[in-house]
Length: 109
Length: 115
Image (cartoon, one colour):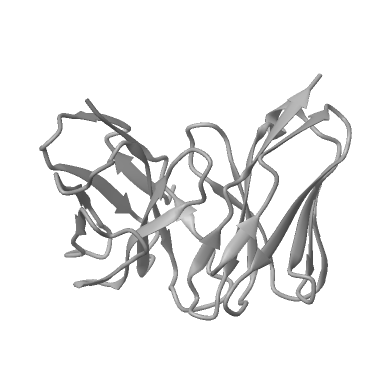
């Protein structure tokens, strides 16, 4: 079966750095997405990786290793507004998105 | 501003009633999707549509129905056949469904509670 694993919840301190991991087992691979979702709101797109390596976008970076079936989202200089759930999703060989359950990130002052 | 509008934001339903959730987009996107989100689970695809007058079942289509009569609109009906309809429903759209960098734009969601 197809599976996406990510930690259920993480806690970090304002101003610090946090890494949210995502491992996947899917039928084929056409890219990995990270979305941010504040409680009760719509998910919003953060990043897309299809090749191995690190993609940097401001305070957020996303890394992919296709051989290991592994990605992480790195958030630097954490702000209170970064408190949200972070969803990892993989596009399989049929271009269908397989979603992880999300990681709830709690930022403490 | 372009975006996706879902309504209503909150909806209460009695058992045995059908309800319809509205989803409208002005992004000129071809593909539209309905997802269901439950606590502790990933998003699950209910239905998707790549073009007007055509749609396909997702992983959990039983108890739901959709229509795509206009490019901008993709309403979802939750029927009385859906055994556990209480959930947060998300509508999304994208330029097309069959490409890798297929970024989804989501609506704000509709929370359905069955009393």
